[in-house]
Image 1 (cartoon, rainbow, N blue to C red):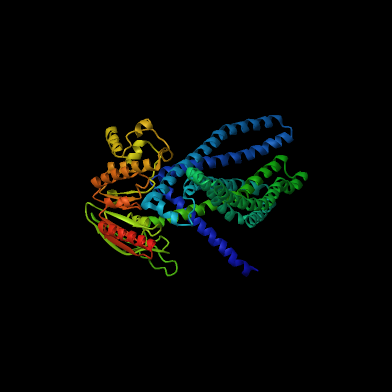
Image 2 (tube, rainbow, N blue to C red):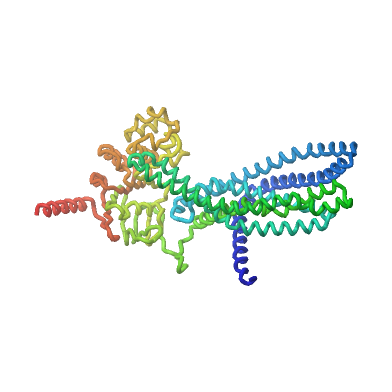
Amino acid sequence: MVRADRPVVERFSRVDRRLLKQFWAIAKLYWFSEERWKARGILALLLVLLISFTVMNAVLNFVGRDFFTALSERNVPEFYRMVLIYFGVFVVAIPVSVFYVYVRDKLGLYWRQWLTTYFLDRYFHNRAYYDINAISAIDNPDQRISEDIRAFTVSSLRFLTTIVFSASQLIAFSGILWSISIPLVLVLVGYAAVGTIGTVWFGKRLIGLNYNQLRREADFRYGLVRVRDNAESIAFYRGEEQESNQVKRRFSEAIRNFNFLIGWQRNLNFFTTGYDYLIIVLPFLVMAPLYFAEQVEFGVVTQANSAFSQVLSAVSVIVVQFESLSAFAAGIRRLAAFYETLDTLADEQPQRDSVTDTALSTINTETDSRLAIENLTLLTPNRQRTLVQNLSMSLQPREGLLIVGQSGVGKSSLLRAIAGLWKAGTGKIVCPESSEMLFLPQRPYMILGSLREQLLYPNTDVQFDNDKLMQVLEQVNLADLPDRVSGFDIELDWSNLLSLGEQQRLAIARMLLTRPRYAILDEATSALDLKNESLIYQKIRETAAIYISVGHRASLLRYHEHVLKLESENQWQLLPTDQFVEGMKADVESDISLTVG
């Protein structure tokens, strides 16, 4: 039997060690940071207050003994003397208790603030926020930053103070209990051991269930957020039923897991509730024979009961806190997985094949003033599909390139590779610094801010006067926008306020302000009429030395010197625009002759 159980014990031991390593990897970030002395000083003050509280509990234990003895013996002067001492201890205990809670919460606030800032810095570093979307194991990073960090710091301090308080209680009251009754100490040790083993056995399933509950709740919340962010599109499609079913499905998964969770909590509560009730009478059962034999006073019995409760509480931390510990452990695992992933992305290490453990090939990027692609083979991030194979091209100053092709052949993906977002593949991309390039997507990103901040994004630290901003808006036919929104400094919901065409023109206005030497447009004028499109490209040609566009409109051909046509099966053609137009005419004439024939 022992031999059969050993692998199980060893497995749980490994899990516990890994959990402790994960906890320490995150906790030490703050306690060894630039704020370490401030944090350690506040922690020291917190522990002093905590131990002071323990000392007062020990004093009250002795005062309580004499208080109840005086009461049972009808000793009036002694009784009132103990009452005065009680009140004296209370006067000191109240501020100690209040400041203990305040200092603990203040330290938790400082810790959360530092740790959240640390995770946010790593989340936005090296575009980890983008790459992490392709990692299925890391769900809901927003919840991990906002909720899991808060729970980690609060719970860590609470459990630390609980452990320190329990240890000080154990030291302070074990001696008292031993001096009163050795059999009572032996009963206490045995009872605590049975309680701890029973609680761990009943409650070990709670850790996994709490982990799953955090994920299910986050998925449900994310489903509701998506509905809010895409309300208009859903309304146009009349997709209420599908969206309702999708949100309800996520809610049902959360409810189903929660049902399992409360079931196991019920099983645990059966054990812990009985355990708590028996504590009330157990010390009296041991001490009653001594009292009836007149070997101890009544105050000693109450003192023994108080000391027994304090020591048992100290050695039964796992029993009392197991549900909270299981939720805390689940949060540590989620936060540790997030931290390890961010750490991997920050190191910029090449991906490795999970089977052969060899480094996977990545696209080489070289910084230069020119824009060129050399023998590029582009894969999807999961490396399951090849989009472009052996592509080579180079653009000279004052030249424009139009990328065309059917949907799904990799037009936008090629732009992602140029931007450095997709790196799976081989070959080399030569491009300037990212600060010299501006990427304009089909649906521009509208930030939460004012019109001024919209125009300056992402360089919001650069300042332009209102006349300059008005001049740029006039160039993109948005001169009336400041009057419509009451100026440049009113914060509004721009995604809902402006049409897609207005958003695209606003994005072009950003480009006219930043004046990048290289512009990359991914169907950035798809919602514009031909007149505004012509106006926009005229401004682009005046501003950008080199520009690349992705689009389907034939009207775009007149603004570009070259056309890159991506075809199925990884094929491609790079042609001068005139030659591409001639090919289009030949194809049209061929289609007409076939139709007539």
